[in-house]
Length: 194
Image 1 (cartoon, one colour):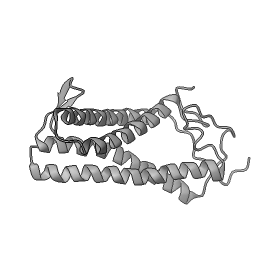
Image 2: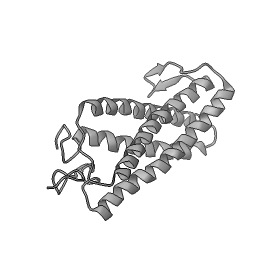
Image 3: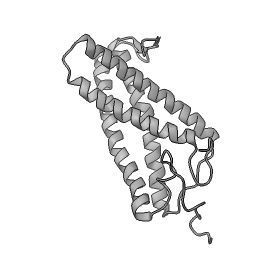
Image 4: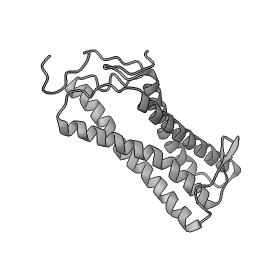
């Protein structure tokens, strides 16, 4: 598997960032909703600390992903109507914003609550805002609603990938799968003749 992306597939590192981030976000979201229903206890406090550390890991992976994206070339879009390409780019842009905003609002929520934020019990991170119970309530609500919005946008993202795979029968999904490889070679841009 190539380290760098080429015209037919995403690089190993790009795929790793993509799938690891997706798994951590979905797993951490499910974990949060499960532990929120637990009775108050030290175990619940420890689980929330784990949830926060996983969220910080997502944020760190996102920053590394942006750095890699800036230096790695990306495969060209598969041929599609312009509006579909614009919609796909818009969905990706919103996903990127949400991937950053969710852990940042969680961090700010924790700060406004007045709790120290530890990364896997190794070191503390600075507070993003001063202690403010009213702001904490607002940030907690925003944090949860951003996750629900992420799920809605994710449905569009997955739906688009499946549409490309099942209906268009192109390599959009295949070239992002962990062991996927394009079957049809370099796509021809719309309007070009092969």
